[in-house]
Length: 198
Image 1 (cartoon, rainbow, N blue to C red):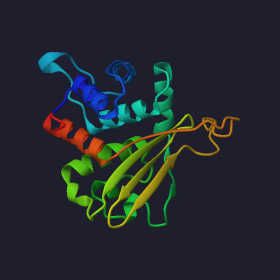
Image 2: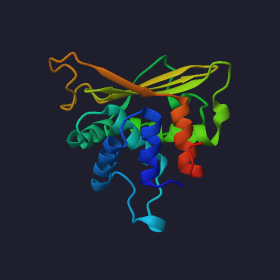
Image 3: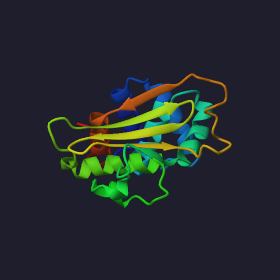
């Protein structure tokens, strides 16, 4: 089991984003009640895959710390809006616990479950070329989970196009994409369940 400080350090090592920046995101998530909290030392909180998912998405989303809670709220409102083909929803694929996600799950739920799945059953990815990629797009918040294995899966999560939070067509054409792959997801799983990313 890992502490919030270990999660912050691990993400900094994996992404190259400064520890100080990720610490500020983590503190904002904790103070807003999004991340598991507890004391220090032996009574320090033990992070979950949901905590890792939230901090990973917030870190990849980037931007000012003051805006990270708004981004979390928007990513919490996402649902599956697009899949590579009609069978590309988790319930129609045999991809571990991903198939058990409720119909109304969001991107944060999916990334947390993916971290769990890959840690508990790394054989889910088979074949010569295998990878799992989590993409976070900003400033319009949406994300992709792409699985490359024997049968590729690509699922897009976004907010309702009719939502007042949808500022995609607000006259800006700036778009940023940040992603992590299988190595990061596996190391986060090891950190959460074994206490070390190695």
